[in-house]
Amino acid sequence: MKLTGKAHVYGDHVDTDVIIPARYLNTADPVELAKHCMVDIDGDFVSRAQEGDFIVAGRNFGCGSSREHAPVAIKASGISCVVAESFARIFFRNAINTSLPVIECPDAVRDARAGHGMEADLKAGVLKNLTLGKTYTIEPLPPFIQELIEAGGLVNYTRAHLENN
Amino acid sequence: MTQKILAAHAGLQEVRAGQLIECRIDLALGNDITAPLAINEFERMGAEKVFDRDRIALVPDHFVPNKDIASAAQAKQMRNFAHKHCITHYFELGRMGIEHALLPEQGLVAPGDLIIGADSHTCTYGALGAFSTGVGSTDLAAAMATGKAWFKVPPAIRFELTGKPGPYVSGKDIILHIIGMIGVDGARYASMEFTGEGIAELTMEDRLCMANMAIEAGAKNGIFPADTLATQYALERAHRPGTAYAADEDAEYLETHVIDLAKVPPTVSFPHLPDNTRTIREAEALRITIDQAVIGSCTNGRIEDMRAAAAILKGRKVHENVRLIVIPATQKIWQQCVHEGLMDIFVDAGAAVSTPPCGPCLGGHMGILAEGERAVATTNRNFVGRMGHTKSEVYLASPVVAAASAVAGIICGPEYLSKEGAAK
Image 1 (tube, chains in turn blue, yellow):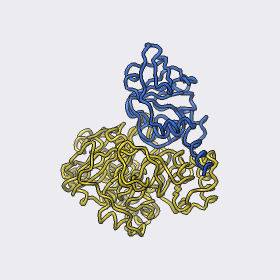
Image 2 (cartoon, one colour):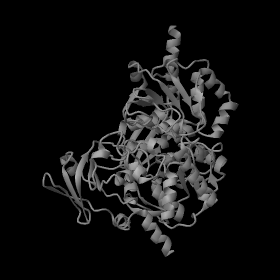
Image 3 (cartoon, chains in turn orange, cyan):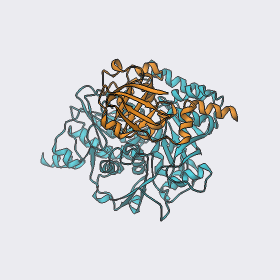
Image 4 (cartoon, one colour):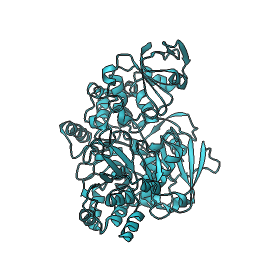
């Protein structure tokens, strides 16, 4: 499956407090959370974001709190993929568990500007900047992680595990 | 140390960095923000019962006493789940505390344990020689259902501590100093392993505070060897010694940093990242006025922190332009403050003393900042908007610095108060 959309570009150390501030954590409803996604760093994000769009960011994306509400809010905003120079570990883990595609690709981050067209083919391991006509190779994820994502996240994976036992 | 604990819980002789393993867990933790999402996922997994009702801890601590109707509903959802599954370690308001101060105090942690929690500061328990790390709600859901979690074995970075900390230098100053040195992603994905003779100079509160903030350097966990002090601490509370793991002589490290504790100055993190550190002298020179001071949180709300703050506040008054909020981290610590006369000192000084929620640390409630306001806090994060408005500022510091700053009205250390007093 190919993911395609426009880039929303951010810098280094985008923390989960700005992705979804604690004042909105009195709900776990993805639709409600999406209404406030990125609000403390980019007030227009919610109105700009369209189905399929990409978030492209620098180092240590998703640092700070373990709130899974962060990848949930991003996904519910229509974002199909987050590309960063590097990810904070809990965010990366949460993204995989909730099947939000995340790609570490410093070269693509360096080239991308807000509004650039992006395309990712996770199976083929290819990321493209359509505006610049550039193609990047993605490091494949370990087989176990791929299995988790293909199962649709940890919920489905665990459900299958529970049923087998 | 970390790799040995992970290997023991994966049923393996040894593991290597980068390996993906599945481990059995000794304890899984959730709170009133993360557990509701986990409970939804638990149900979506089709799980009918928890793997072990004695190995799950549920603590309402972030938005309690309930701050609004929505958060009340979240607390209720967790309470109902705890009752339905007869969760042994559910801590109701009035019998609770901030989770990472509460669990060690209540004897739920011992050396060698493997603990996951749906809260990033779960890494706190490394102070007792346990492996503990923050995960998300779905991980918590899976752990509650199966008693297992997947991990990528982290590489280790060694921090060899030597010497003895100077006056007014606590675990908070040491960990802020280290984060300032290596950066907020300086230990990303790695285990921060503290070693060296300097550890013997650190109290359990110092170590809990340091392990707590390992996540602020991006680490998976922070861990101390379980020495006599840590083992004794666990024995008195958990009534079991646990298993003490030591690093091998030839253990592999990504990096080794040698830190002479005698040279660590009182340290303050300026907005808006914990690695933006200055020494207290540099901060004092800037004469930064504050509107609020917060002494508490899972980082610095323990009894030693309360005592340190009270020693500064005794016989002094909070500055007229400052609101000082003191939050003892557990009911037990709160009561100790009463018994030791600390509560009188806080109230006489003009501080508000709160029941233990995480509250202002994450901008939840009980001390939100307005636009343009500035706080010094013993909490753990100073991100944009962390304690309130996106144009408010948080400076991270130790309890003595927060207490002294509350008195002076500007960010300063206790020695500044003495000098100022002498000048008058």
